[in-house]
Length: 135
Image (cartoon, one colour):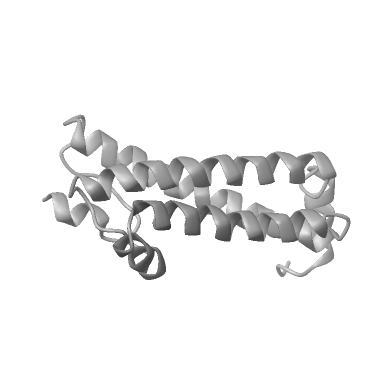
């Protein structure tokens, strides 16, 4: 069935994906992974290992790492605050799920970069072309 169909909605509800507890866990995960992403990105970029892939964050990084981390944490935190304030609306609880999945992929990318830097792998799959700079 389609993405907006009743079977998907029923599946999400039966899996507990739209429950308040799931929302709070996903929001906490996004906020923690955002901090970890900011720290790891700062390390990789300052060491010249990879460039910042997000043009807006690259601009913030040009202003300094403090501006980069502050803007990254503030933007994601503001989005999280809006979703938290709207947490009684089911769509707000659904909206956090893609963000959590996206950050899982971002963390996978950081693991891949770290594995290549440590010499564990010679070349791996990455999101975008970030590891091309290491070749």
